[in-house]
Length: 224
Length: 224
Image 1: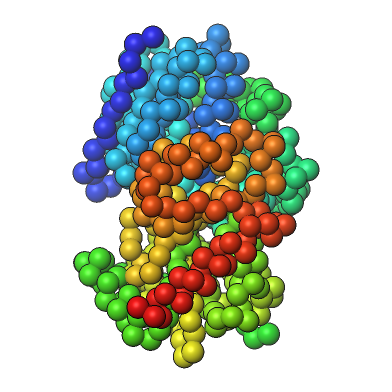
Image 2: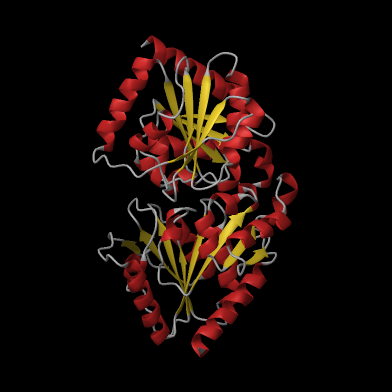
């Protein structure tokens, strides 16, 4: 396998990110590419979840992955090794989020010919990424059980902007004071339309539901 | 117990945060007040660790706590209920970090007469808070076992600026692929002088070591 491609992301110069994000969505629509923006805290299991999901989807849709990180390349190496799909590393150089222009810098480095689905793994951060529309069709996030079920109370914007909340690491539920019912209630307070799917990326449990959701999303986007 | 005091933090107007942070440290020194800036990811156990630590220290030093959060008051309520020490809530209104001027807004709302130690619980975020000197004497952080031992590779600045890394939730170590040895090695790469103390805030194990470190820090600060 060839070397990891690392894109050093430059600071965005656009003043109106919302307008830029809408323009990017339009361009992706024209190309038939669905972009998912996946966010979470550090260490919630984004990469492990992606590996499981990609391996369920890669024979059904053509996929590419953009791994945003402040510095390291470990996630891209892991994704490529364990799934074989095209994955590039976006280095944000200390920046805590990606906006639409920064996302576009990543997309420009991918060969999108024939690609149906691009997954952007955003910087691990529950605050800043929620403030910037990346141009993705949907935002999804992972909340892991050890973080606690009260996170929608503390990071309201993140939960408001996400259409899907994956509750990961359900296998360690017995060791933590985490109630799925309370979590669903708190998520609904921020975003009544958000879906909550419990998963365990380590064992794979529940991940097929996320894969089905994504497949149906991609299908609808192409049909619209 | 009277109502929770909530301070709505305003955006800082100072251009030179470093200079402002040094000025604030000077003022605190003159008053004999030690300020600790405690950082971590969301859900790593900052508040539980603080409650344990405060209960070990409150008969030895006079303490006050500032709980920074984007929106909720749950941490301040918990700290006051379980320790009885003075605690105020700093609402950052969506801002992802605190700088020295924002920290000063909190300190101005506390009665510092006779207070030896103020602990600032920063916004749960491994990225932005690392970039801003709050004026604290020391930075400490919590890395919890479920987040993974690779975090110093991914969030280098946070680990570079911290003098102390508390590794929390050691009770669930058997259920996660987390090596304390590997963690120590990665932390040392970022900051060879940083101390690593394993703790379990839930059971209290190891927390007395953090309390001792803090007590000795406060003593040295007053003597200097």
